[in-house]
Length: 319
Image (tube, rainbow, N blue to C red; front, side, top):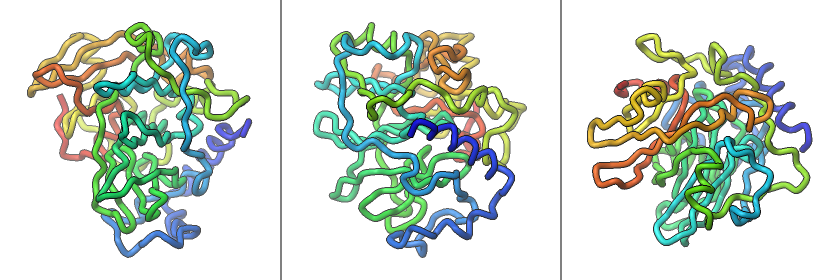
């Protein structure tokens, strides 16, 4: 596994010139997937390089007390999940650069914590659906540069950015999203000294490095040939997605607080980009946000690249 992330990057760069030629081969290795049921054109799905489970999801996560964690830099980004009555949990992005999915259980609720580096999309899902609990793996495929997950129970394929089944028995179904947010490790531990943090899934692995150096300031995303955002918006700009609405992080940085459409977006200080420098903890500042409703409750949102918002919400509203 030591060279895993660097090999994956090299493969992606080669495949970027291949285009949709990979799509006829996507069904190989998926004998249990019902390809007669789809909600998207299979020609939109392409190989990302690694095959099925080539990016290994985490299925038995372990956690440390905040006070026992010594490896994570103060500015490193973590995904935070805080459920009523439960100790808050931080999921460092350094681990998602290698694994992309963590199947966990919090307060009796089975959850999937997911992060797609190519879209900067971090979303948490309830793994329960129609009376069964699903567990998720990484298919190795992409659509609109976004990770295609699969569930191990039916081997249906799921679009990570929106939690929708797109191929297989569960095509057309939607996973419930759970409020979460991204912030610096320092911000999490200062607010939650009694919290928990995901432990390194693989002993001895060199976590903390970024195989996508300068990716979030590149001209275009990897393996994406869809439409770019309107109004001259930088396709790699970070935007705060709430439903089908988007606000740019740059605007929030200027205004600090935005109250519109019954939503409050509040600036939460800086955090390091996981997609800038070789070492995640040294990445440039990109800022953090908390999103609440009119009653002060955390609501589902995502901070994704502008191109990804436009790809999955082409009729969405830009603020």
